[in-house]
Length: 342
Length: 60
Image (cartoon, rainbow over all chains, first blue to last red; front, side):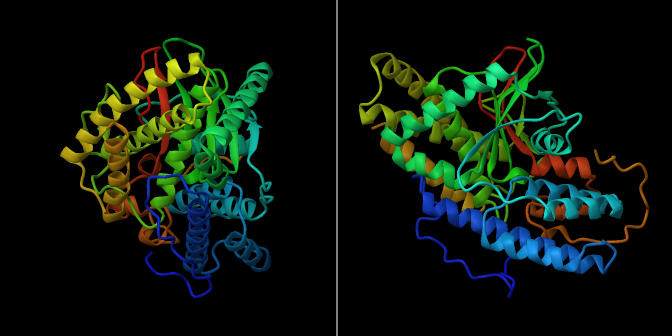
C-alpha cells in the first residue's frame, strides 16, 4: 500500500520524520497517517467484500470521513484487526459485527485520558484491549481490572511523572499526549511464579498503552515507563508503510534483554525504547529539577539503560536486516547515545 | 461478548491481499501458510514483562 487514495487528503511529511528527539508535530503527522492508512484498508475490505459484509453505506462512509479528519479511539484499530482475522476464518457475520461496532465508537476526548480496564471476561471492549496486547503464544499472561486503591495511586503517579516531564523534559511531555489518547490501568497476576507485566503497547491499539497499576515504583520510574511505552507507539507509527526489520518472526536471536531467544522486531523495539528511557533520565537529570535522591536513582538507571542499549544495538548491528526506515530510526538512537555518553 | 469462530470453510468467500492492509504487510509474503493466531503474534503486542519474579526487563 504505497499510494494514497484519491479520496484521502495528501499529508505533508515532516523534515524530521525519523529523528530521535521527541516532537509533538511529528507525532500528530504519524497519527494522521495511521488513520489514513486504516481508512484505506477499510475501503479496500469493503470493495473486496462485494456486498457480502452487511455494512450500512451511509454510516460507514461517515465513519471513514471522520477517521481521516480527527483522532479516533485506539480500539478502532483493534476492531479492524479482529475483523480481518474473522474474514480469514470466513466468519463474515462476526466481521460485519466488528466493523459495525467500530464505526459506532465514540470519538476520544481531546486530552489524554487515564482509564481503568473493565473486566475482560464480561466486557468485550476490555477483552479487545487484552487481545491486542497478549499476542505472544510463548508468554501468555492474565490481565485484570486494577484494584481501586492501586488505580488511584497509579493515576496520581502518572500525573506526577507528566508534571515532572513538563518541567524538565518539555519535548517528551508534548510528544506523549500527541501520540497517546488513552492510558489504560490494569493489573497482572500477583503469583510470583506467573508471567506478569509492567506495561504494554500494540500496533493494533495505536494511541493507547496499558500500565500495570500494581507495579508502581515512584514518579521517576513512571516517567521511564511512559517514555518506554510511548516509544513503542512511535515505532508503530514509523511502521505504517511497512516493517522496520526484514527478519522474519520465526528467526530467533539471542536477546541481551531476555533469557529466551527473540524475533529481531522485538530486539529492535527494545533497543530503541531503551535509548528513549535513557534520554528521559538524562534530560531530567540535566534540567536540575530532581531531588538528590532522584538524581542518585537517575544516575543508576542511566548506567543500566546505557548497558542494555549497547547489548541491544550490538545484536541489531550483527543480525538485523533493516529496511530504509528501520535503518534511519535506529541510527538516530545510536547517534544520540554516542553523543550522550561523551 | 462476541463468540469465537466455531467452524472454518475451506473456501473463503472474501479473499484479501494482506499487502493492502495496514499492519498486515509483515505477514503478507506467507499469507497462505499463516493461521490467524500466527498473524496476531507477528503483528504483535509489545510487553514489558517480568517472569516469575526474575527480570528480563524491557523486551517485547
